[in-house]
Length: 105
Picture 1 (cartoon, rainbow, N blue to C red):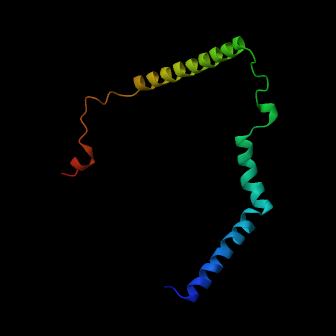
Picture 2: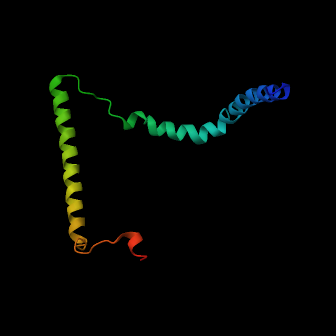
Picture 3: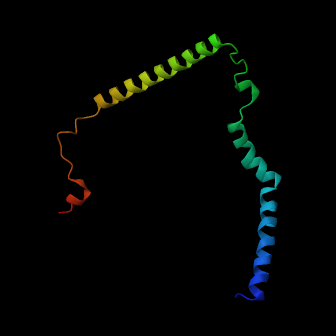
């Protein structure tokens, strides 16, 4: 097969990769630069989270209705903005597109 040189190389690689990974990812500066900012994105601070959760069924339904109303309002605003954008665009349906390959012939 590969011989003893290949086995020595594989053994060295098996030892080298984890040690280098531990040295690189275990560096406190790397942790501070790469992990902590992402951690704050995933888990916001306590003052930015909603702590008072509804506990009874009526409060849950009221909160759900409020969330649905907010989503519906955002959707209507988005639809209105797209309609205004479409109205401001010139009518291109009358022109036919020949495509990029047809323009060369």
